[in-house]
Image 1 (tube, rainbow, N blue to C red):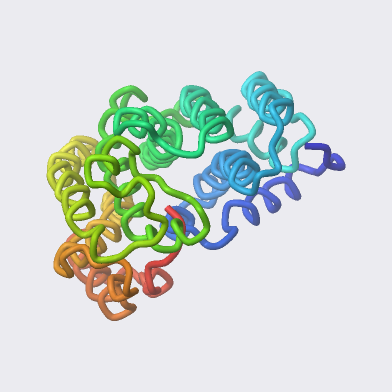
Image 2 (cartoon, rainbow, N blue to C red):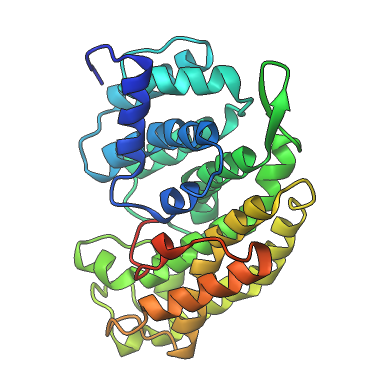
Length: 312
């Protein structure tokens, strides 16, 4: 993790480049922040999470590197820029925005699990992992949505624990849709995010390619996700009272892409192996128009009108 020392400006630019890598959905929505300060704070925080996630996903990790990343993050919270390219930007962000350390602690736990395991034994082990892999970044994003001026910096309008608990169900639901949506591609390269004990009950533990025989299990998986969707949206609604129209729109944009994907998958009876389940650009445009009309008529959301194939 050695980089030449960067100026604060160059560090923020490097963080933005890392955050936008492969143009994930979270980054696309973050571009709607009306204040550049909050957008760049998002880039710094997300870049630090993306860096370690990419390290693990690409198989370049060692225990020393993961431990080194944890030490870097601790240093950033203590005011030390460290040697990472995003370090000065993250340290500056944390000095001005009151963001909890908890998401990085939980992410580190998830990344260590990723480094040591190739699958989930049970659904509970998946849920434990998801606390770091998806709830953590989602809670940071929601906290930034709720940031308000406080002294010489910014603090969230609600306690972090309430923010985290309110985003949990929706973050996990979006991740499960991501798993369903990408199952064919993941299995083709040897990645399987479905719990082993569930696959065994459906006699799929040896299957390495999606086909019709997967349909009963995929349907059960999708039904479980759908069962938690509306309660999750209700939890998100509990955060909206202090929010502006734009902030409410951004919060809903985070989840509604995946909600629309889930509904299409279920309409197709969970056929995710023939590549007909991806929401097309026109379907996405209709969703954007609906959300804009509900929260902020006239807002330009064209940059989000893409075929939904990006990372969570």
